[in-house]
Amino acid sequence: MMITTNNTVINTFIEVYCQLNKDNLSLINNVYHSDIVFEDPAHKVVGIEALQDYFKALYCNINDCHFTIHQAVVEDHHAFLQWTMTFSHPKLQQGKQRTLDGCTQLTIDIEQQRIIYHRDFFDLGAMLYEGLPVLGRVIKLIKVRLGQ
Image 1 (cartoon, rainbow, N blue to C red):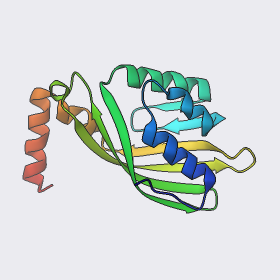
Image 2 (cartoon, one colour):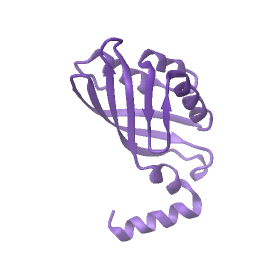
Image 3 (cartoon, rainbow, N blue to C red):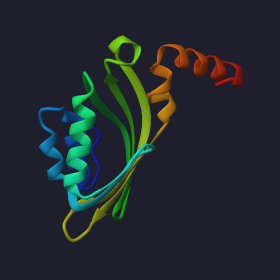
């Protein structure tokens, strides 16, 4: 079941992200403004062409990736989405599927009805380092000792 809101732009965004894969990355053109500012814990990308290149580089290095949107809160031209990303990378845990929870902050350009700002919040360490053989075990041990 796909989450829907009372905002057409956010609904289109959710639809795109729920079906996005390395064969249909052009779908991002349906939601993002040409001057999009995209940030995540590792990168800041400005402009639709740079974002297309960033997504191509990300998706060519993974086996698969898909998003499940659990909740969306929309107020005026801002939205926050809570999601789970399920992905597989050949260099992390021998390519086994992994999950990562995160949140996205979005701002809509009212005139063009496109996303002008996108910021992802997630634990980069959980995404990358915990999937590495030796380092992953050390990080998990530390988390256990901290009571997480």
